[in-house]
Length: 443
Image 1 (cartoon, rainbow, N blue to C red):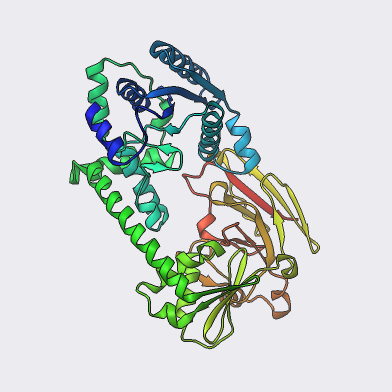
Image 2 (tube, helix red, strand yellow):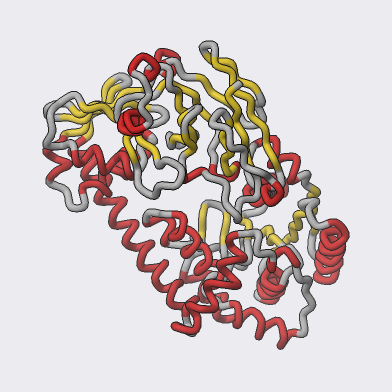
């Protein structure tokens, strides 16, 4: 296996075994223990980094002691950091898993820079890649989500990505290496674990070589993504004209492209327009001028020959923002009170229309409170399709003189979470798998 890893490193130009010092992320689990041993046997210059997230009590303490002894056994420099992960997650309004990921990679980079190391090695392998691809596909993704885990991403390298989990286990047994198990890897609370233990075993009955198959697919998708990137750049160069705070896109040029919606979505990605909105924009190409489309940060107007994109002046649209951790918002006489509930399992969803219960881990802060606009749409709770807000208000028989007072609460990605006082969006509803709940009450 050593030679397989050496070839993988060389073929993917990950790093120079002879010249580049590497920071190796070691949790104490099977994968990272094998990676440390392999890189050490190959003669790489290695330092060990371990994260203690403060989530698993004595087990986490034992992990840290195990990795510390392991580094000493190899005679390697050792770095450890102890994080207040839950407190950080609450502060930022994100899931514990997201907080742990952000904290560890930020700290890895700090150690790399301070110690003058070339790269950071993580122990992802083919099974991790398959899980990531399927998880991304389940949530909805473009090409970027289907190429799985990148072999090299900036200073992050994955030297084991060409190997299966069975390869790692066989090596570990042959070498008589010891490792520690993390019980949280078996918890069905986490989506990845549910996929790992319930879904993937069924798929492996259909294809025993699923991990290798997915790895090959990821390589081909990665190549396809590069082709698309170059095509998008060429199209953008022909169709786009930038002036002071205004971007023009020639509609005729866009219409001549293959997969117009996909190309336009990539061009508009920096402006924050979602895939569904972009499809509506393309559908409006042959319509009359003046149609408006909004992202959280920009407004696009379909003119006669061009799409005209300008920054949105949020203060001029009567918008107000609720930051992560903020509990009160006063906006034009309307007061909202927000509260985060950590244990969704024991949460009882209020029946009052004045309170919205939202899955906190599906939300992106800051939340924006604004008046509804023509063209706004959402997915009313209980429905799977989208509905124009104007049609929803008609169905609800909202009097004309009250429609102007209707407000919507939107996530930072522009999706409507709640038509205030009327209906929660189905995409943000609290489900059995939800971990945390954010309630927002109109006072």
